Image 1: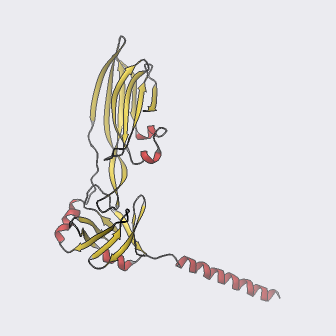
Image 2: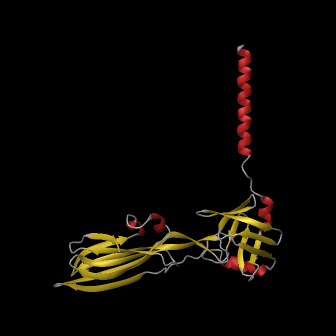
Image 3: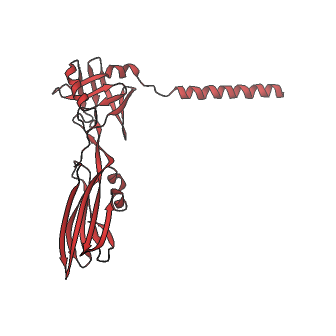
Length: 264
């Protein structure tokens, strides 16, 4: 009896093992033939402007501010894997034709070019340009309150900390532009006495500005606002580059060297 029971249990184990292996193999595989068809430089059919170049596993854009992105084609869908994974249904694909739906549901019509002169765009833009002022900016302000005179200094220092902003190009495709953030130094003097000194980073505002916004924003500027009985007021400007979206944080330096920050 035990002999037959052992054989039965072994059969169940083997069957389950085979079922697990079949489940693993059921995952959709990348369409390598479709990926090969996409290799080359593609132009927008309407205006013949360059849309992108597919080379290997990567798509490169002629706009040198946009980061290259890994791509794959699975089940008639183009996947672009940057910070987010974007999916674009393929409408039609052939040797020199590529049509897909962008994020608005519009069909983008591309044609492949054999003109090798377009490659110069991608050679020139091999290193992604970073959008920011990329220079130290200094300003100083002298203000009076009562019988006291205060000398305030602001210095904007560019850093190598990269901020990636998601946007959409002319084809309605999600792209990522890269920027450098700033560190802003604020110092306040009363005569020869240093009343306040601090390097402000974007992370200093994490309790006041939503994290999702902050992740794509830079600490752009710090401007003098006013002086009153509470102290010296500055406005820190945190914004998403090339966008009207911004937060204004009021920085109040008290006369005892205290710091207070509030959303305006």
